[in-house]
Image (cartoon, rainbow, N blue to C red; front, side, top):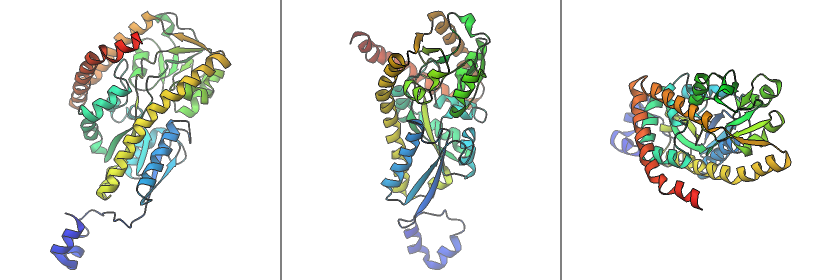
Length: 357
């Protein structure tokens, strides 16, 4: 019931009697200060600055009725505690990726990326027009969290290696930073997956604590200076073909907002989701040129037999995850159905065009 209607019907006494049970509604004059915690280093290009842009849009479009302050990883909470911080209300918002919470919600990984799965364009289509968003909201509801797509890395690189990968045998014993379902695929191929926040990658690679790492793509990898710590730069990013980044919003804080503010928050997320993928597309080009021509980075394609082995193992991993519980099954059935439909279309549109242009 809207506040103005309630006042008309109940009068001041009725309002007083019911105020304890009614949700607090943010009026047009209320000024809110929200905290956004992130999994990214403060102001890190595209990922961190994308979170900054989301905060700026919400603040500006709301005419400062909501002012959002961004905290980089470790400033308020550690990188991998962002979801919990938003869930318990320590922060009203967070920015990260669903595969970071796999220890809490294993099936959430479907909402970030699936190895050899859909790309950025396809993932966004599934989420907003194929039923994915409804399933995502259902998955996070028990935690009092509302998800929103708020960025996409587009197709990534396979990563930086201090060991040549010439055959499947070279994956055995490989200690690599690789998150999500891709990490489990590497484990089954004989490697050792490690989950590390971005801020620890360079030192871990440089000191030999890990043999390899994936991060994002040329632009972000150049910013981290990973070319100084590894010999080989492999492609394609089989494990992250279009990783959706997410805004997580405390549900109580969101529901306390007026409808126009709720719309501003949701649409700001959609704007950043689109903008980030186009920014990556624009900036990876020049960064790759710099890596190759200025820093003489050895860029290599993973051998076909390695990709074939990883693809086979990926199918096993995804099938097993989908069978773990009814929620995972429901999400994967939706994801896979949409993937097959969009592949049939893209085979005669996007894919064939790329091959002939």
